[in-house]
Image 1 (cartoon, rainbow, N blue to C red):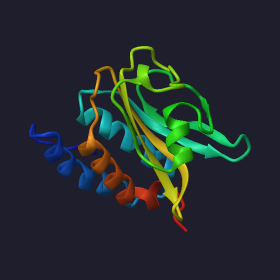
Image 2 (cartoon, rainbow, N blue to C red; image 1 turned 30 degrees about the vertical axis):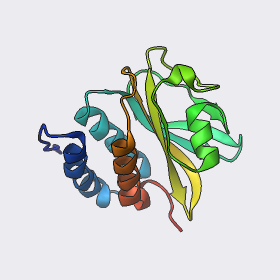
Image 3 (cartoon, rainbow, N blue to C red; image 1 turned 90 degrees about the horizontal axis):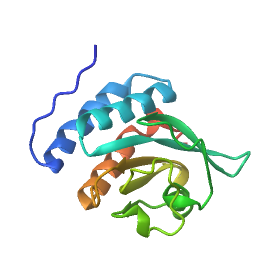
Image 4 (cartoon, one colour; image 1 turned 30 degrees about the horizontal axis):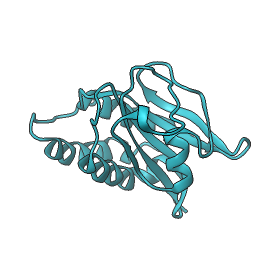
Amino acid sequence: MEELHLNTGSKRERYAELIPQIAALVRDEPNAVANMANIAAALKESFTDISWVGFYLYDPGTDGLVLGPFQGKIACTRIGRGKGVCGAAFERNETIIVPDVEKFPGHIYCDGGTRSEIVVPLRSGGLPVGVLDVDSYRLAAFDATDAEALESLIAAVAGTIVRTE
């Protein structure tokens, strides 16, 4: 059985402990779906402010994003390119932090209780191939510490969740 070992320190300290554990957890598993599922579970389990965490992956057939592995309430299955926070982060190929989702033009309410959100692009060859979406019921739950850590996490595990050639 896999277990995470985290202290109760600062957010930065928790991420510093968590990222290598997640990287080790997924390192030898060749199945991207299994790895994304465990990454989502590890994040949800490790941070009480997270209400939903999961992946949306690019679907070239629709030129939009389709739901991947996640932890939390039932989610929107498809998100159009450039739509909502996920679509915008994908289209811009950059991390977006939204302290108050009600103030983000075009925010998509998959869960009406969500108050803040951070979305980090997944890349292959520098191009976006999906996003990691993290939501909270608390306003301004995410900051530069989260952005830096989640970007580091995605970089550390990229080869286990997306094709990197």
